[in-house]
Amino acid sequence: MSDLAAPAEATALDVARVRRDFPILDREVHGKPLIYLDNAATSQTPIQVIDCLDDYYRRLNANIHRGLHTLADEATAAFEGSRDKVRDFLGAADRREIVFTRGTTEAINLVVNGWGRAHLRAGDEVLVSRMEHHSNIVPWQLLAEELGIVIRVIPVDERGVLDLAAYRALFSERTKLVAVTHVSNAFGTINPVRELAEEAHRHGALILVDGAQATPHQVVDVQALGADFYAFSGHKVYGPTGIGVLYGRLELLEAMRPWQGGGEMIATVSFEAGTTYAPVPHKFEAGTPAIAEGVALGAALDWVTATGLDAIGAWEAQLLARATQGVSRIDGLRLLGTAPDKAGVLSFVVEGAHAQDIGLLIDQLGVAIRTGHHCAQPLLAQFGVDATCRASFAAYNTLDEVDTFVAALERVIGMVR
Picture 1 (cartoon, one colour):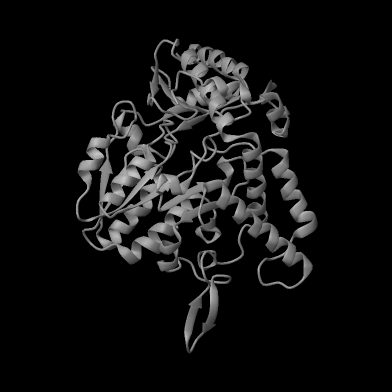
Picture 2: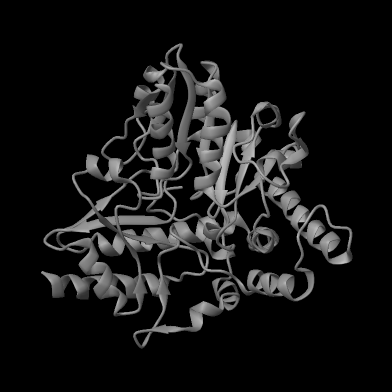
């Protein structure tokens, strides 16, 4: 969807009703009503998820899977029920393809260490886009230092869009995997994952997709996309922190060695005969997981599904259009990331003002935005900046909040210049 045109169905979202689900939106910051525009970092949490966490600790708290008592059985059922919800949310073929992790970062590291170490050799190539979050760059660099693999960078044009012609030209007989974000956390660019996957598969390579910024905004079907691996974080999709997901095609997961060892991921352990591993997904879930958070992730996905991702995405497009039009009138403000297909992220710099100063001052007016490099330093370096201001939108934001943000930004810029 365009960053300047909102679909007609944007009005289908009852924003007033949505806002009633988020108690934090009732608070004030520095005597001003909170306007929370830092959703790309962490979204707020609806009361349904908060109640789920509270209920878990009040009624179900027990370790899962091997206990025979009632609480252990009920906690296990709730946790594994969330796995089924994630499977449905992602359109996966099998619940065994859903691995719980601490978040997107751990999910990517699981692929790097579980798949990469076993299948990559010196000289093999991994294609990584310039717009990646550091969590989809640094693990591959660490592996390259150890194994001698080659990282080839998919370039980005002046709009913040992947150069698809250059992408196709990067493939060689040594290309083994493509690592790419579904939606840029820094610019909001929505990448054509299905097209990227088809090209990778045509060359016999796999594709790992960082979906942390996609799952809150649009329907994701990993099978339709052709993703071999897909990762996302609970705290960006209205869920709790400390929980995330790695989707992997079943045959890939079954062929991978575990990354971490310990309890839960074993079938048998013996000093004499060695260790055998539990079947997937449990062989990748060593130790006691984030049980309460896993259960509450299911509640978050229930909320998102009931609210409607199509309606959420359409409403966020309207918010982005309003914000883009508003800030474009400000002298000396430069927008970064002008892709024709964007999620609700607005990234900008202001001539003569540091992003940190703007972020600190606008907070005094009750507006929360993110400033810094957004763990995307290679992308920002291409555009000649080391930090931007980033406003990012969610289902509960309003047009009035966008207008207040623009007015506050104009006021702050007048103060720092």
